[in-house]
Length: 363
Image 1: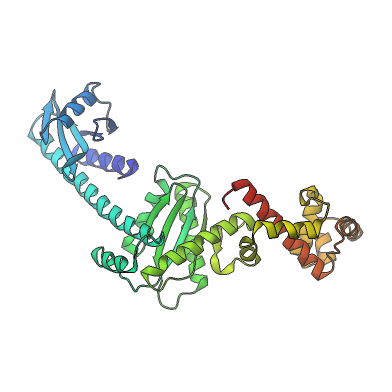
Image 2: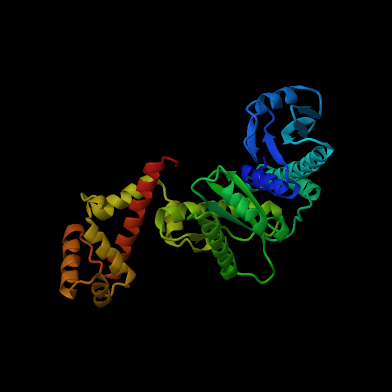
């Protein structure tokens, strides 16, 4: 379906050129957009016209024309004005709208094909046959990016990305749902992880600038052929999930750089509980106060360096030592020791993972 934003801009542009007012209706005769305040009877006239067999009709100075898809009205376009000139401009506007409907239908068919490819809904032979039908090269290496948005029900982000990253650049941009947009990009010879990340940064900057939205993006490993896109998509989806759990501050997540979060994400919940009980015993990780958590995070960030961590925490060295001693007495872990530090780091990540799973109930 053509976005309302695109429809409005098209009609406004035609009005500017032709100096006539246009009214657009859906297949049921409901008003979608008007370049001026219409006659209150306009919608009822449009409904009468939709129900008729006629392709064009005039009522009280309003001229109507049907824009069809598969023989049925996809839109009804109307214009107000006297004389043959108004009807000529209306037919030209309808021709433009018809071209948009046909183009959108072709794009929808291709998007639907690629959506089924990444969702692994097609047999390999079907992928080969349909790729020839839609003129999508089977052996071009590609990469799947998953863009997480808050809500794109109005297609605002999609409309911004398609002209910049869509088929005119060798890529494909479409939605799998209202919160996730897929960008499939062709990979040039010699490109590496640095290039993949740079592309993700450009996409994020584009959305931030044009849509004023903060989004996150993840990507999988390169897919040598079309049939491998489903693997790249699953990897990108996993990177998105792992990023939300363990790396909330990062806006870009690569499947190849998930670190220990990848391992923890694969653990069964029962094993996670056993590990948490082993590390914390009778203590609950959530009992650690904000000051203690801040101290632990900064100490880890400064590679267990007491002097550096105390400076970044704006506290005296002895205060930091006191906090670490207190933590050791509580948990029995001396995180000045590398092994104990790693144990606590992993335990806190496992606890974060468990809390996420319990909250979302999706595994």
